[in-house]
Length: 375
Image (tube, rainbow, N blue to C red; front, top):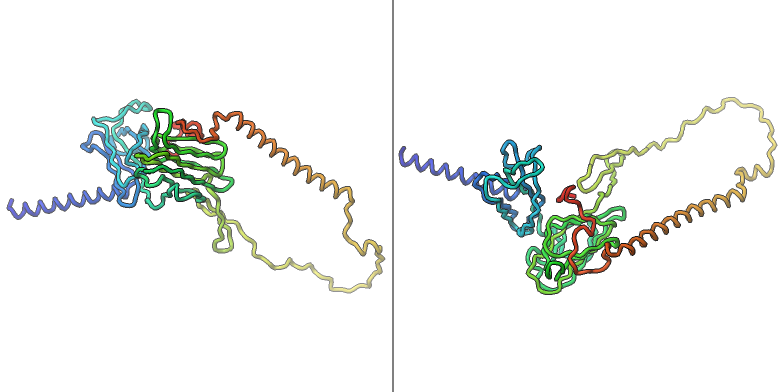
């Protein structure tokens, strides 16, 4: 083989390698899932979102593939990974894989995992709201963070925001990432406090992918930082549920009812009558006849509408007032029972800002058995 042919072959190999590298880089930037087999030479999973974006880990798990696939296929048995990755919220994230040919034991199928998968999304930093700059939020969903996140929140401060949605909705609060200063194992130096007037909780320390459900249509969230801190703070995501229906008019004078936030948007058409023509006229008499005199009673002729007896009117008014009174009494009884239970269970419902560390079960946290990441 001549020297010129060797140069051409080297050049083609370099071009192919460059193309493969470029395609791999694109998959890292724009993809929403990455996986790797344990029997490969790959030692980590690298997520790159780029400048102006923040990495959010949606799900991470070990998986066993009977076909030795390096990513999830329907029918694979899996084991969730609940690790709190410090790189969450930054522009890139590198997750080290366990060493060895196999990963963790998946007890549901009694096999060792042969791959590890991460599902993520890149969130633009501009959509995250600073808790100290937004005292009230009324959107159906949104991101909230401490000042300077994912960098240290840096100084002593007390900030608060209130989330308020439609009266017939509730709020899911997802703690994507939290790192607040602790003072020992049970006390908090800095803390996050939130309540919905029925339940409240104080949290500190490190958490990831915790989900809480409110009992009402509003939620107060407060950051209490008492001193300079070297911790990241927190990054939250909230969403209102169930989604609000919306009704719009489309062509042809029909109503289209759709649902917001990812629900079904198939229009339901409701016809609107546009026929304004008068009803058909009955056949008129074409012949004339001799009029017959009719004698009317003077009282009946002056007032054709029969008058209601006074007793019937009074009975209707009294009946309506009675129904309203019963409804009001029922609402008062329900409110009394709720307040009575609230004050009896005061130890369970934290109605004050307690800096002691609290477990997530105090605020109706989602059960791990259901879906740790998406409950």
